[in-house]
Image (cartoon, rainbow, N blue to C red; front, side, top):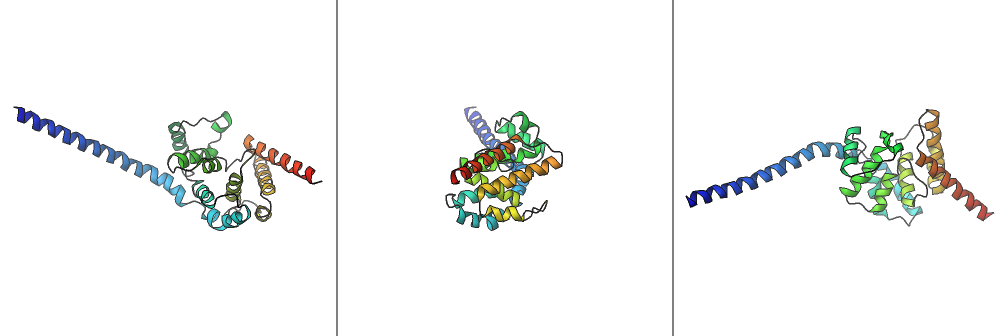
Length: 221
């Protein structure tokens, strides 16, 4: 009887372990089926022009930015762009992201927010890269050099054809702050012409740069 009980107990442990492994396999397979096609497509369809065409020249101009850090930010900045709104909201809940009222009403900007979270929690990027991804669509006041580079690279990458970007592309290699200001002004003007609400972060970013450049000109006078 004891032998029978022991065999039964050993079988239970074996099958329990096997069932746990099967369960983990099912979970991982499900993740691969749903997450990889969604997130993976975003990574595969990233604008390689950002890293391969635009960045090297910027790196020569702004040497205080680490090359590998900038490449990681460029590579991952749109990693969740292909997700739908429901999937974005699931990530927002998963990573306990707090959205303000304005952000809640702008689903088209979710990919910057969720992309930053995925870059941090899945790919383990440093805070500088996370922040550059977070603000690459709207900008914000007092941006770092890396944040400006990713914002501008995304805005003027070669596939963009919504307006004549040649002056902005040329300015980007001459004066980063003035290029940022011009890019923000063009973006805000374009939204206003289409009757689309302008994000307040973009307005603050523009106003901050205006003040910064004005102060610089006064000091130079």
